[in-house]
Length: 197
Image (cartoon, rainbow, N blue to C red; front, side, top):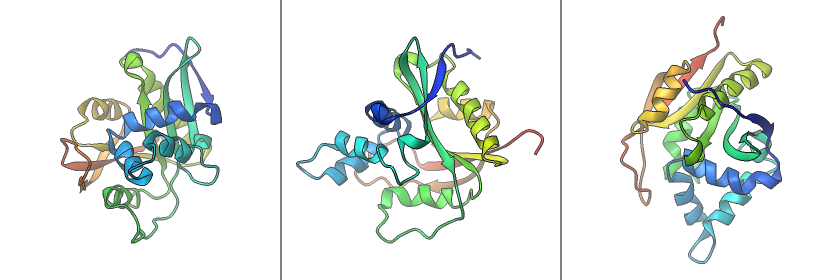
């Protein structure tokens, strides 16, 4: 496995453009589909994405993101946070997100890897594995013994990385697609238990 030759830092508001791009990579087109719906016919989906990751009040925020840098440039990012108790899914929840929230509700009290991505030119250089090691550290600091993430069934490269890093399939839910075009069938919940726990 290639070792990442770079550094990590907490994200700031200056990183929201890169974070929106990396969240879109991680989400395989689903974030942009949702942002497009939220923007409406005259809005800018990317502006919606930047505004969402600029949040000061939600978990889905730059405040919960770690930036991987190589030679002073952003190579990738990790956005993650502790999941609390399972919560009822609101009737207003976009149908595309319901299966994802169902899976998240099956992983309470885990440290959730919401988004993990590297820019294409930095893939295959150990960025993902290094960020997952940082996720382990953050989970331990939060006194959580397990980590969780969700991946599409067709994202075999990411799945191999997660399994190498100790994540194991726990559950699946059928995707809801509608306007989102994707080759997959299922979302897959993976959970990792810390060594020694």
